[in-house]
Image 1: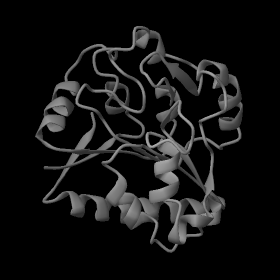
Image 2: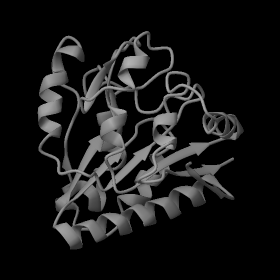
Image 3: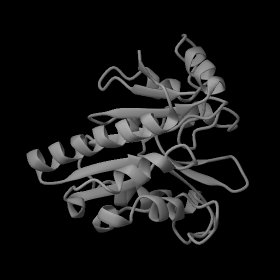
Image 4: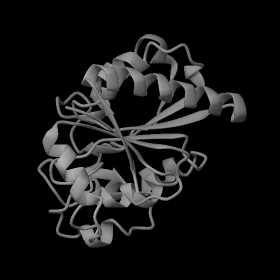
Length: 227
């Protein structure tokens, strides 16, 4: 079962988690000479990114990977890559390596093999995985209303194309995301707390795909919440 951490404010949650992530990345660099960081998109992690990018790490040894991507050009307002580059990969973090998921293909399905090949260059387990969760229990781009979600949550591949949209999306798989040394889930608001609590109960992954993260036994997911 996941562990829940409650904070008095969103700002405090963002600052404390950013500092903790930075410490874990620095530890990985000290032990293995490099570190990997998976990050989610959306609005929830923006304050965290702004704090994390100020941390004095050997950022050139850190590889940053989006948890998922909308199939839009990188200059589009909905691009996760654009947001990550704008909010995280600046200041001290400008030296980090970035592994994009988006490819200039007509659909995410056409890019799955190429992206999986790129991901194979990343040493596993991942060092830090930072995820969000939607009001419907989705995480990354694994949505309960995807008509093929039952097979997606059990996929062996490191990434999968999501049959949702528009725009269509590509997502890291549950199997890949849980091959990690640490997993953090950042959520805000009472509605998401209620979804988290519901997803903690037994039930199919297809109902709440985030269950695949919350059920991880090694590592145990750390859920960070503020109203």
